[in-house]
Length: 463
Image (cartoon, rainbow, N blue to C red):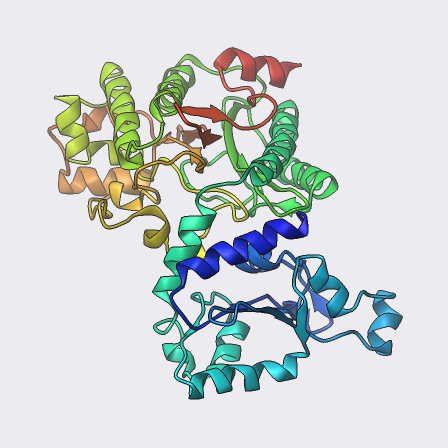
C-alpha cells in the first residue's frame, strides 16, 4: 500500500474526468476452491487497489462526483471472525489509511445507490469479470445479469485507462521489485534445466520463489518442452537432451505489481546449431523492438518491424522467400509468429484487460487488424512516456497450423513448405522483456537483464 495521499490524489483526478454521477468500484470477495470455507488465495480487484488501496475482501468504494465525497462500504468483523482471524482493524481505521473519512456498513450501499437512481444520477461501474459481482450489480442496480456488461460505463473505462496507462514513480519501483523476483525465477529455471529433471519440479520451484519473495506468480507458469503451444501449462514431461525448454513466468510483488518474462533454454546447456539459428533471429527481433520503442511510435509499427526481422532471418535460412515487406504485409510471418509483440503491464500482468482489450490497446486513431496473427496484437496504439509494456517476439513450428496452411496453400509465394516440414518437432522460442517507455526511448526494467544471449544462457545452465 502506498501513502494515503496517492490514493486521494488518484480519486481527485478521476473525479475531474467524470462529468457527473456516482463511481461504484466493487472490491472482490473470497472465491471458494471446493467449499465455502476453503478459498483460493484472495486477489483484490485491481481498480479497487488503484483507487482505494485496501487488499481485503468484502469492500466497495464509492466516489460521488457532485458532492466530492469518497466512501468505503464494508462490515467490521465480529467475535466469530476474530476467533479464526485474530483482532482486525475497523473499517474506519482501514479507510483512514487511504484518505477516506466516510464509511458505511454494506447494508447501506443499496439505499445510497437507489436514492441516486431516483434522482436520475448515473451509476458508473466497470465491466465485471467475476460472477458474484455480476449478481451483486444485478441486485444493487436492478439490471438483469445478462445486461450488466452492456450497462458498464464507457466514460469510466476511458478515464481509468487514461490514468493507469501512465505509471507513477511509486508504481515503477514496485514493478522493478517484481522484475527482480522474475530474474531469480528464470535464472533458477535455467540452472535446473538438466537432462532427467522434470518440468513439474522446475515449475514448482520457481513458483515457490514467487511465493517466498512476493505474493505468487503473476499468472499460471508456462513451462514446457513443447514451446510451440503458446500457453502450455502442462508440466508432465521429463527433460530430454536436445530439447528446448520454454519458460514464461513472472511474479506479483507484495503490492500486486507484476513482472512477465520469457526465456527459452537448451536442456543440458548447449544449443544445437539449428536452435542457435532460430534463437538468434528471435533475439534480434526482441532487440530491434526495444531499440525503436519510444514515445509516439504506434506499437503496431514496432510489432511489424519485429516481424520483418523474423521474416528476414527465416528467409536467410530458406524457410521463407520473396520480398520481406510484402510477406509481412500479407501476414506470411504469422505462420511462425502468430501472436502480438506485447501488452501493457502493471497491477495486472495484462494491465487493465478486464476493461476491454481494445479499450486498452487501441483508440480512435489505431484500430485492430482482422488479419490472422496481426489480429492478436493486444497493444497497437501510440506509446507514451510512462507506459510499461512487454516485448515478446517468438518463432514456433506448430504442426497443425503448418499442415493447414500447406494444404490450403496459404502464402505459398512466401513460404518454402518443404523446408519448413524439416522443422516439425523443433518446438518454439520466445524471448520476453519488460520495458518502461521514457522521454527519449525506453529501458529494460529490473536491476539487470535476465541472461538472454546464447552464450549467457548456456553459461547459466552449465554453471
